[in-house]
Image (tube, rainbow, N blue to C red; front, top):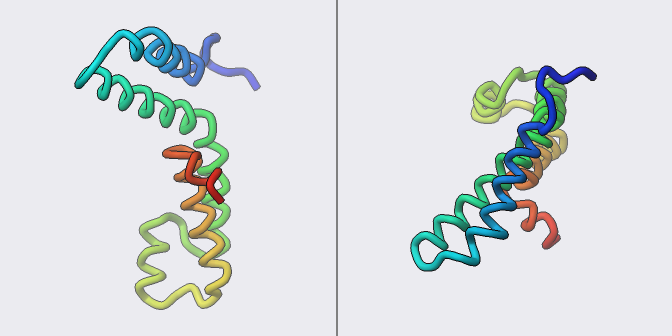
Length: 114
């Protein structure tokens, strides 16, 4: 695949900034700035994971929604409110996959606790 951008990739740039904050800035600051640096490190980790995992997750989610006969999450919510889809097992599998994908980006540590 030919990428439209040269290296480093967006994910690599985000990782470099996150690493700089974690390695150089965090040990040198205290109090409120230390707290906000930790928040920034966590946010950059989420962005990095979303860049890396997001496209494949989006494709899987679209395929899963299609198995339920809906095009997007809003349509899925409407279908659930209306008592559709009838196959509860498939619905639960799709919802579980969606939650796992969100956790893989937002906080993969929760999945490690299983």
